[in-house]
Length: 279
Image 1 (tube, helix red, strand yellow):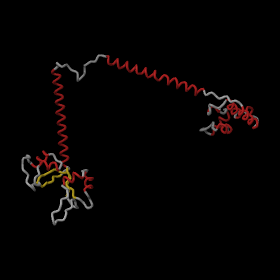
Image 2: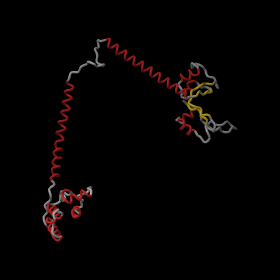
Image 3: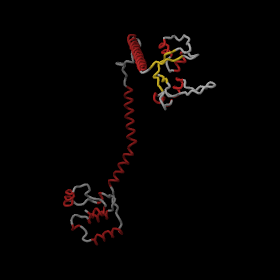
Image 4: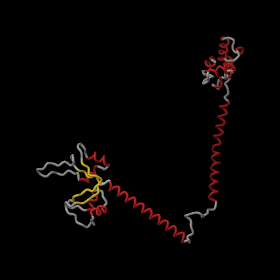
């Protein structure tokens, strides 16, 4: 066994237990070297088989005889072994490759035949909700009523969804009292606070025709009134409430003004300033 492993580089009893190896050595001959190297020459196969024969009488009688056989092999003409399995496998692969277009054509013909057969069958309108007799006015009226009912149900569902959204927004919102500035209108106030004009009118019981007086209080829905903390800036508030800094500037009119002669400039934002967060 050791000689076979030295000559072939393969362990013939790999992954076997000691008892199984003992049984195979005692009762079975070693495998052919072609089991591991199919392309080994016939002369080399015979030398290895004789050197590792099970019966001592069949082996080389001395190391000199074994050496002489190897030297003769080096000068002799080798007869390469024929790997019939490999040749057969290559032939099968070639046959399969040649038959691929034929199989594809047959499959396409079958699919085409099925499609022609299905479309050649007469189509029945029985049980169809779409095909109907145009003279059957009762059926047409039933379909029209069904469509109208479905549209009404969808409108009611949409209205309920909008109403629930308004309720949720009001539960999480606050009313802020905006002081009217000279020249302001309800439309400008609604745009500033991102609030629908109709909602602003209803909240203040106004028709929209009234003329607003400066410093008059107008109620608006806002999300929150946030008091600026120490070391906070507008970007921090924007990130906290998910509102852009530009919207915060516009809603709170955070634009620096030129000081009057003799006055000190007033900072735009400062600790403790109330910031309106639009809804």
